[in-house]
Amino acid sequence: MTRSVIHTVLTILISLVWLANGLYAKVLGFVPRHQEIAAKILGSEVSFLAVKVIGVLEICLFIWVISRKYSRFAAVTQIVIVLTMNILEFILAPELLLFGRLNIVIAVIFVSVVYLNEFIIKPKAA
Image 1 (spheres, one colour):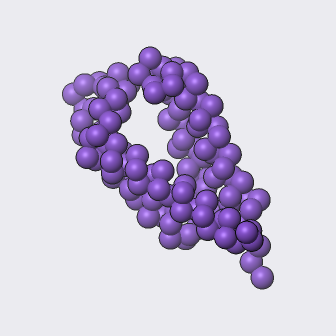
Image 2: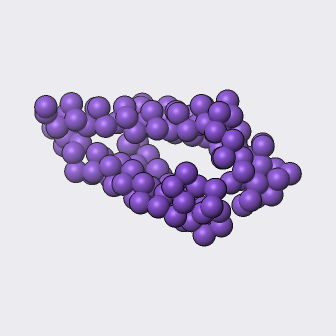
């Protein structure tokens, strides 16, 4: 496979992570744990709305990533969001995470793939 194909496949997979987490897990509410985490961090009064808003924003990230517009800025944005969210959850709600404190390892792997895809694998413009 060429770098271009690998980059395209990884871009699609990365974008699908945002779509699945935004639409399936949060907007449609199929992963109630997200609302529990939001309730613990933000308070139960706003957790339902917060999770829906976060889900919509994740769907927007899906569109942004798949569009490839401003892809370097999109990659940095994803890295900052994922690390910030996971550090907060690591500190404030580790017992609610799917893999507990090990979730941070998954987050680091994900942001590493985002970084590699955008800054290493992506073919240079001619």
